[in-house]
Image (cartoon, helix red, strand yellow):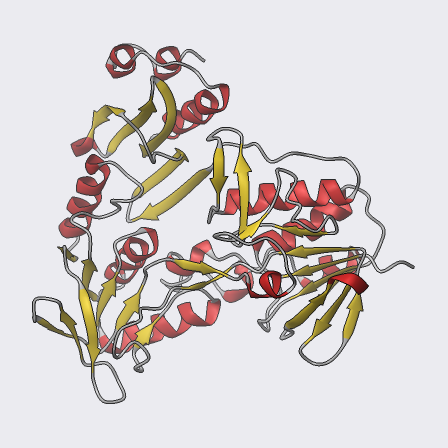
Length: 406
């Protein structure tokens, strides 16, 4: 029996790589190395249904234990990798054990970004990345009944919606002039601010946090203008830092994530990277991207597994994302950064509309609010690289598929 494949990281990308290998007929040993005590589980529900207590922990699991046993995938929980010995094709674990590999997959994900300000480590200041984070936040919110959320991105808004629905008083602080300013048009920002405020969430844009106050437990937040907001509970939701330490120490190329090619291969031909930690070249956007999404993790993992099995499958898919807030399903196709034109179809007041983003006349992204048909049409059009007539796209007497020429 040969060394096989070792996967560092027990998240979406790690689990997907293992099962994709078996689906492709890979017969060698597979090890998944995970820090947490659980088998690989889903993370999107941590800010939504799991945070609200609507699903049990076991429903987060990708697969039950017997499936891993049947597929002969060994999951080492509560285990950390210490060092990659590339010249020996060996992984050293922190417990001192050495594991040989034929191929190594880095699915190390990332850590929730912490703020470098006074009081950030006080008790009562939460981050959200792991299952235990969500459980701890839910328990604290139920006890305190009040929370200040720092960050008006996906996580901050989803947590605000979830905790408000549980009866919690919620204040959300965003440093930028509007919500979601880095990823969406002003129409989307305005829509979500209106929705949250209608549910009783207090939104404060342009609110820059300078410190968290308290002795050993947070008692208040101080803004740059001197204002004090009292609270016994805070969530910092300001993004993610990719886990690249192992790769850097091993001498792999790293630049905003672990650098890969379109087959998820790193600068070492026997080492791959997938998921939140990986930075890949996009043929669609003609630049390198590091994406934090389920779709990205799955596609990169499948690409890595295919290359390991000798049947290369390049990763050239259109990125897509989703967010659930209250009764709103927000689906995003593509990346809107750098757009020079946009078209809105539908009415914001009707809670069913879409924003299409164009650059040089070509569709590059779309935000669809409760409009799955627009989302699917946009994905196809972005992949096809179609030139779009903005006037025709804005004419709602014409179907979106006709307007996009697909």
